[in-house]
Image 1 (spheres, rainbow, N blue to C red):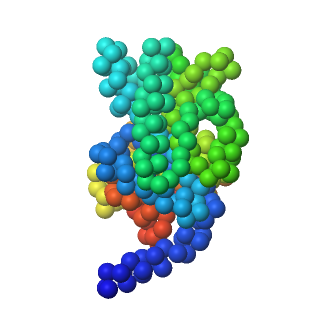
Image 2 (cartoon, helix red, strand yellow):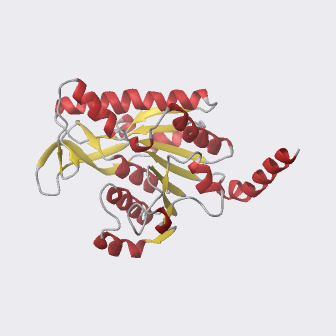
Image 3 (spheres, one colour):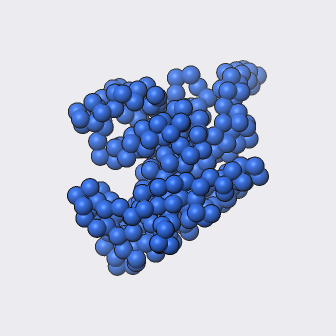
Length: 287
């Protein structure tokens, strides 16, 4: 009986948040760094399905860099990076499409269905959702078919929302030249969240959030204002793979997203803890 009462208390505590976020759009960027075993993946997707059942509107954007590199190596293609960006020639782009739009996307959609949800797998090319322009590296080097999102067409996403489906999006865009472009998944998630005027944009990572001291969870910054970010970047507190996530958060907030979050996706049910509890588990970035 005590256990049942405790469960009821948890539901009652979550009720104000369920009421607050019902009907609101939450974009979740699910990265390769959090893809542990099947059980960890199921926990994350279970959170997303639950969010849908309580009236929220989750949209999933996924990456898969490590999977792409492994697939390339199996085919005898050596992954090459310039200024942190994958050099994407035509053979590499074919692998990107096969891994992101095929293997990973199908796996996520299948698991959502097994958990009782309804999902549709998409790439950014579908319905010209992600329109992209070709970019060079920061040092001006040609890196092939790598694109930056220039426009988001939300028509397909609104149609799926009306039909009560969870969109699961692979970050590829289409250019005016008709070519497919490899788009950074963090950037894609930020652009989609901004275009949808989402309530929240949540990045699932393999770290607790943004910490003032590297590898020290005790120095976690729970709330970060946009104006504080340039200083933290200059000091090196925000560095490496955290930079594109924070830049995507900044762009999303400027586009009208109310809050962005960077949390540890390896923590069981991290999404529920961040959204439905007062203390949360990661770093929130606010205007």
